[in-house]
Image (cartoon, rainbow, N blue to C red; front, side, top):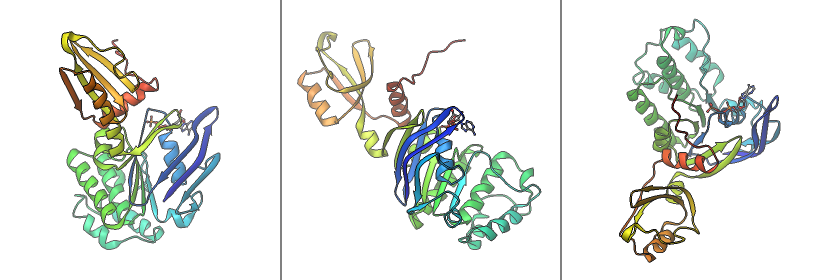
Length: 300
Ligand SMILES: Nc1ncnc2c1ncn2[C@@H]1O[C@H](COP(=O)(O)OP(=O)(O)OP(=O)(O)O)[C@@H](O)[C@H]1O
């Protein structure tokens, strides 16, 4: 559904996005992760047709996105700064959406009024940040978008509302193959929701994978040997992202094939050998460390 070819974007002297490629299939939930300033928002805004790229091409359903009114009628871009008309109530804003989004579904809007505990007659600018975000989802989902682009979407929502919104999103993906592109620093949430992950750093795509593959590609290994002596060259030929000694136990974070690695370690007859699962948060931290973006022990 989305194809990004060699896309670049500069702001004055900053190269925010440097020749990036990305492919997202219809009906998938793609999580864009990355360090602060990595270029996530810039990329989302280009895919959403808000910014024009300096170079490269962006196609949605094989059509260029920038200034494409027809495509924009079928997609919603929700960024951190929500925009509502001053003085408008939810109903008035809904009428506006209805007039510009061809797939607006009034029945859905009414159904969702049971989910979001907000009066349609309330003025949006008088609502709390979290309530405004609820209205944004309420209106967005009533437009029946084929593509939903979300930048830090759950900021301000309480835990119950977060889960409710996530359920609504998953339901739309399952029932009508909506595609979601989501950028978030909340990796637990991304892990819950996404089937594909892309990690950006300094405007470049470092890793792009199915979440399940990403998880089966990186392993946390605990290993110990008789007398606490580590065999020479253990894991030398593997891609070790991190290692640490905890007494006689050695902890490794290794990228590679689990079976091959296990067979290799078994050969040295360890007295302890465990392969432990990694969370997306751990994978992110170790992958970022690998490109020199490490956690510092800062004490001030
Ligand atoms: N409108 C702008 N004018 C000038 N520079 C910008 C503008 N928007 C973004 N940048 C710069 O482009 C780079 C990428 O910013 P972007 O907001 O895309 O990063 P991000 O990955 O979304 O970051 P964060 O996780 O901190 O929100 C940064 O160096 C930022 O300072």
